[in-house]
Structures are given as C-alpha cells and as structure tokens.
Length: 121
Image (cartoon, rainbow, N blue to C red):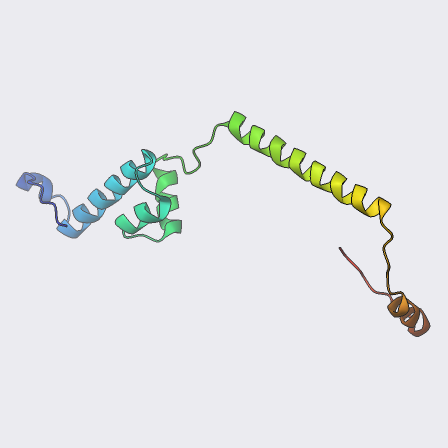
C-alpha cells in the first residue's frame, strides 16, 4: 500500500526524498510500537531496520521497550521465586522418602585410576 502526503516544496528541499521517507516510516513505526499497535519486530520491519537498530531508535526517542511497572515486575519475580521454592520442596520431599540406587562402579574405577571427576546436577 502506498500513502501520498503533500508537503510544501520548501520542506521537501531540506533533505532528499529517501531520507524523508525513512524518517516518516521510522516515526510512524515508533508511534505504533509506543501505543502497542504493533510488535517490536513489526515496527522494526516497517522502519526497515533490524530489531537491534530499532531498539537503539527507541532508546534515542525515549520510547519504552518494556512496558511493565516496577510493582508488576516485583510481583512476577516473587511468584516465580515462590513457584521455584515449591518445586524444590516437592523434589526434596519425593527423594527423601525414596531410595535412590546409584551405580557406584564408575566411582570405584575412578578411585583405582586416581581420576577426579566434576559431577554437576
């Protein structure tokens, strides 16, 4: 789709038409993104920029990229920590009551060969 805008000649003479087109696309993309009308990737596409360059333009034009209040973010963090804590408690409860069989042959072989392994869960 093409949109035509009539501009006075003295404004068009200030810079090349390609630059005006780019600036108008960027301004519109920033406005759409700021007002949550399009996603970050769609706004970058409209501005004919990659996402990283569009993010830089957002910063330069003081357009927030993350639209979450401090209180909402702290609430999400607390909920995540609570869920992780509950999952860990459930895991520990399960394995405190069950016998865990571990094949110790590898440890015996390592001891004989004087090998130190770093096992991580």
